[in-house]
Length: 138
Image (cartoon, rainbow, N blue to C red):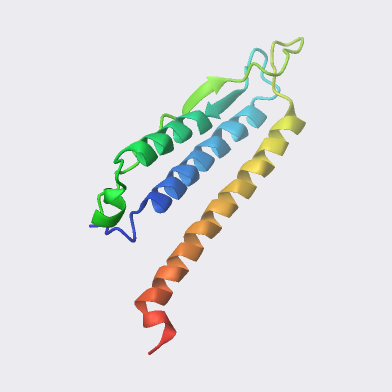
């Protein structure tokens, strides 16, 4: 059973972000793997709008802010990241629109964002560990 310190809003947002980054890594890798496949159309994940909507709904849920005090923080469920066709890049002669350089750039950005989210989660865990140890006073 997760308590309010372990399963709070920040942890849920970071978890969803890590899940998204993992799925995005697989999609970008698939695009790179299919760069020479005739007729292949690159794919990407749409996530930011769905996450922003979820966060807005949570922020606006109870008007009095009571859930922050009473440990009634609503869980962020699936925010609806969906796989979509990337039509932003023009098709080549083989009807393939994957640009390998662009995909490697996405791969690098995705890895950096995953690392940043992992660092956030690690720092939060370290802070909790410090608090549990009575602030270092033993």
